[in-house]
Length: 92
Ligand SMILES: [Zn+2]
Image 1: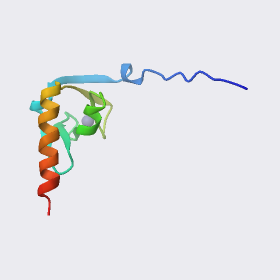
Image 2: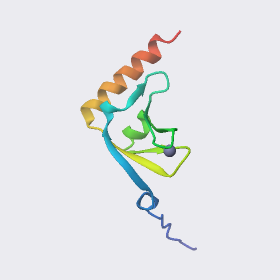
Image 3: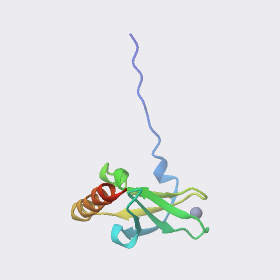
């Protein structure tokens, strides 16, 4: 019987936090239930509502190593959750 410790490198410490924004300052996309914000490289930082609900607060850019820290309180997340449910119900 063997056991191994699974050590995860705190990789978020190695990344550069470009900025910190309130979730209300991000661009909300109801159909995909995700948020985006322009990245200085020309691409966009992205994070999904599901990730935020899981406690993730880092929006990543697909084109560079910068990240954006997202500040979201429970009230704001509840509001967006309702908006996403509404968008899903209204689709089609
Ligand atoms: Zn970028």
